[in-house]
Length: 115
Image 1 (tube, rainbow, N blue to C red):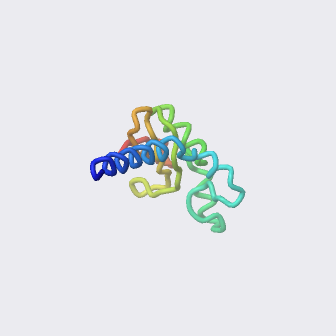
Image 2: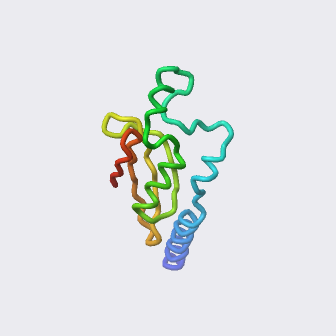
Image 3: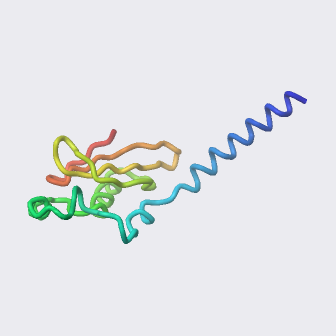
């Protein structure tokens, strides 16, 4: 009886793991939010807005396109981030093999690095 319970618990854990990998929302839900800020940093700072106009990568969507052109995978999350002291984006990707990794896109020069 104890052995059967252990097997059921293991199967339940495997099912939960598989479901969590297959039902991960894409970045589209985040990106289409009407309240989300898509440019790096605060939007109410005039100096920051002037700096953003000089960026090579000016939006989260553009950063995702750059990351996916280099690395294939499903986008799990996109967030603005500090990349080597510059404005940029951190993109979380999931490969077909189930490997999760991060890609950093520097918005000032378009440089892409994988963590």
